[in-house]
Image 1 (spheres, rainbow, N blue to C red):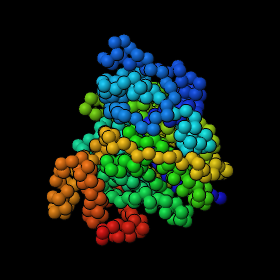
Image 2: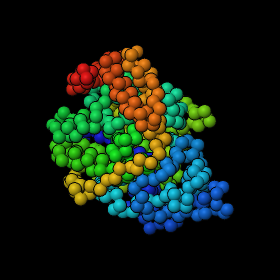
Image 3: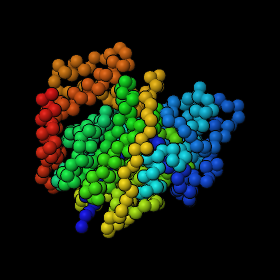
Image 4: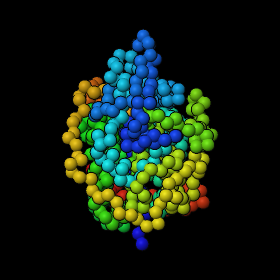
Length: 480
């Protein structure tokens, strides 16, 4: 009998549950969507610009891009929480004083049923988690570090000064002989931030090759990094659904990933695809994030303000796609560490990833005893017409952080000649972005030539974290 052997995670960027999926589901206490009740949800703009508070009520949107980028740093999210959840528009308007009514209204916008054909089709055909929260109230990097490690070590910012050197999921998988792979498009956050001791990932093209191959050869665990549009001329390729980019490019990525897996029936019958988002991106959601007991601090670390990580971030869209789960909605409370707990339990791993992971709820109890017949391929008619992001579009906070990360990585390259050449700061933004591309690539090559010594887990003899295929790939790339 078949079993659930492959877990694939596609983590997109910066959108709330209500914005992306709310129109598909009726509201319920503590969850659900805003179908039939959108007019009951509002924010008053109490920023200095209006002479009197201006009310913004949830309304459908067809916006494919959003400018400027809504803020979602820790302090901004605390402001958005107020009310509860009545501070989103005021925080945006206070940050961007010159924005007009329409720009502020977009914070309360949601995509009506069918506007996002691929995401909405899959949500109706598979399993939606309507209380899946980001792991902390803050931006991209800490939340993505949570999904790899179960903690952000007390950091709440996208900062070069964050010293992330904790145990990772990949340490546990590799030490127990569970094959894994991370596939990236442009700026590879996971490797650069938390995978110093397991420094190998593959470009996204390799995922599609693997998905066409034998089921037995496909990694047991895969994490997919979208294209973040880190570099100005590459905005045509950005598909992470970050507000500054065309949301339909993310729709195309969802189409590509799902259909690649679904087309290989032997692989699909043993797989679970998780589509989720790192955090809410500053967009409104009507459900207040929980604190204790759902938000267990992962460790004893706090940020500079004293935040103990005892409150989750906003809800994010999450869909579980598998023959091993029934169609419908799961109403349990999850955050990104729920995925780690599920994997640890599934493969009987020792939890070295902290208290949040140890206490997290999982969806394991909803797994079927036998697989069911599921929806087949998404139709070609669901592939949208794509537009390039205008050249005038400002870089998002995440994109700027990635460019700065490139410069930071260059300082760690062991070859002094390469390091010196990559440390020169260009004059123009375009040249600086082109340099960042080379910095990321050179850092990967340098790590392949000079890998860090793998950390040995307590009580374990290290088995090696790379597969034979990965070693061959590393050797091939090192020669380039």
